Image (cartoon, rainbow, N blue to C red; front, side):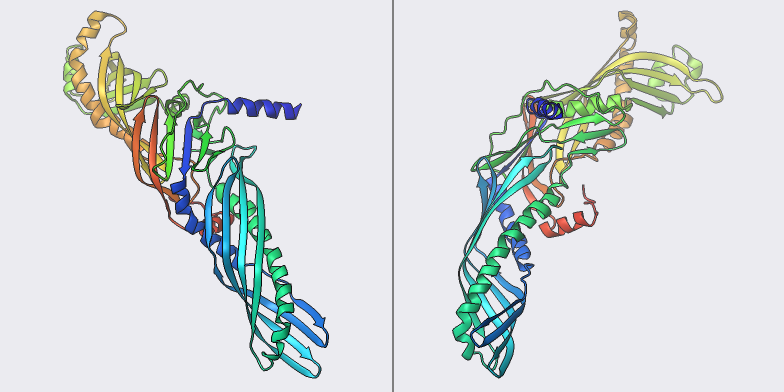
Length: 471
């Protein structure tokens, strides 16, 4: 029963159009190569090998304190179609140092051995999938490692005498080292890199009103040139997480490969945010003003009130809606507007009540990995719900009221929206050199990527419970 319910839910999610898409291209993977190589070298450098004891004829030996002192890896990182990522090392070398103790007849000797593993080949495939929480995860690792030969250089009193048993010692060392490489890389991928992927937000609070759902709708699609991921990309009201907007928006289409990464966001992404803030109660604004031209226009109703402070109350009556076209993005808002005078020590007096329809230009921008919006009031109309005659009487208020909104309300909104919302990227990785393109029904942000810190530093911070303060 539970398995069939889980399957049904999975099929339901996979059929949803994404509100957010991300494409990482082979150019983006190229940027990751150096960082991945450094991370792998650090992991292999930490390999520990057990103490070896044995006898060969009249020789008794002990090998201990094995340390990898140098890695010279020729590596490549590329997409493995339909699977994930391929990390490959070819014809490389590893230099080791270890201590020996050798007893031959009555002679006893100890000293250091410098050895080199040559012709090192490593073939590692990382399987990328969506886990049950909708998170990108490495689900499995295929690893094969081989060492073509190993050489040892002895030092100490009997160094030359022991050269003839070098082949025996290095054969054992090659076998032990070869058995350590894949377990080290498996741990690095399944434990450490998955810790990095856990820093990507899946379902998280944005502020005190709304949260964001970045769960994957299906497994990533991997080709020779890109990794494509479809995210739900939906905001929700923290007080009622089950009351969400239905996604009727178009499915964003990403055709480009020139930049390292592309982020596509549909109208649903923005509409779900507007809907959630509306449902969360962030739909009222009250502002006090000193006597102004607006009050002068209304003074005919009660001239005695002209010198008192003015209060402007706006209440959004329905969730605002976004529209994205090739010419740009806009947000349409409908409000009830009340203009009140505040006589000292007396109840507020309502001068006027009207309906306002406004359209805002919306400019989308990226900083680091936070998406922000800047609004600018483009079109504005007020009218009365009572009669056409009353609507005509409100025409003189249109200019002063628009000015008040531009001076007081719009900056207040922009001050809030400039905080932005994090997009689904791991800690330490940021957008740079971004370009925003507007399409019919969605936007695409093309950018390059920048590591603010290394993979190991990010993972260690995650393991210690620290968070990325820049997000």
